[in-house]
Length: 85
Image 1 (tube, rainbow, N blue to C red):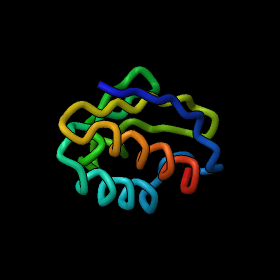
Image 2: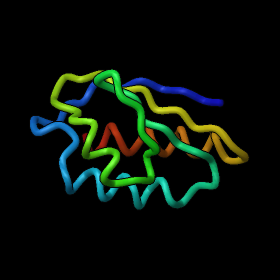
Image 3: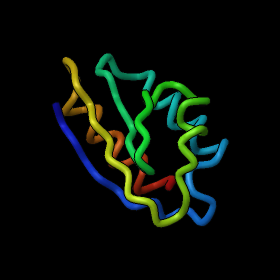
Image 4: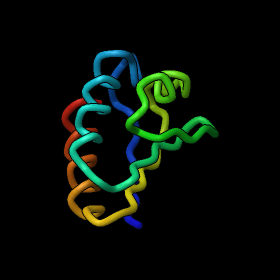
């Protein structure tokens, strides 16, 4: 299992547009990717679960990837979060 943490920089937090793009990015991998923040945990491939977390600007989130392509998945998540959130 690979893990990374990231502090949300987007002024609006994780809102509909980046959450939708995140779900599409997650679907590219076989590994199970989880998002944790605000004391909640959700599968990163489920849009409504992500939206329900209420992640705001400045919130630290933890992303974990577990599976056959976890190294590639966590690298892609790190790139995605830096570029989009």
